[in-house]
Amino acid sequence: MATVRSSRQGILSDDSTEAREGIVEMLKKAYWMELETVMSYISNSINPDGVRAQEIVESLQEDITEELGHAQQFAARIKELYGVVPGSMDFTPEQTYLQPPDHQTDIVHVIKGVIEAETGAIEHYNAVIEATEGVDPVTNDMVIAILRDEEGHRRLFEGYLREYEMEGLA
Ligand SMILES: [Fe+2]
Ligand SMILES: [Fe+2]
Image (cartoon, rainbow, N blue to C red; front, side, top):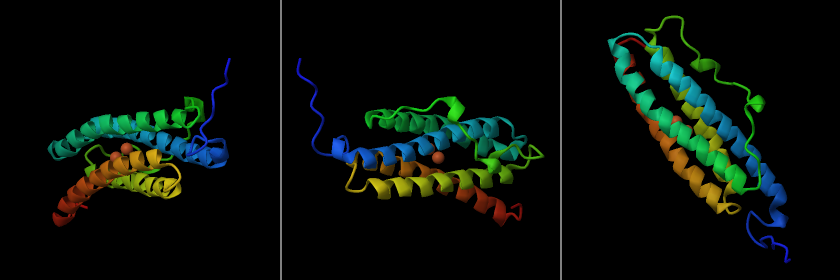
């Protein structure tokens, strides 16, 4: 039986093992970031009280599905690069800023937390794009598309924050 020939070129080749493993580590971090964001957006889309919170709550509800989709894309790419998608025991939470506020009417806390989470994602995804440039075009392309979503999320929540600032509430 003939053995399967490994690719001679590109990120799946034996010569690219080191680069590939480095990218997989970055993708694992991205995967955890997305999953923690899903957790935080679920809690912050349910906890808030008050009429003013409605817009924010609805916006976060829409984002949950999108962030979950990102997590799935990162997981799939980890596997394609011969990595293994980690299990939940490897998870370490980091989003201190998106914990429930002391008062559930404190929607500014939520808006600022979302901006921070999106900013963290944007920074990490820019780093992934830089690391994969000219090395792994498929990951590069995928992360550019995801980066666009995160920039859109941040911009939306910056707009909400501006509104609260205008009214002297933030
Ligand atoms: Fe995301
Ligand atoms: Fe996002």
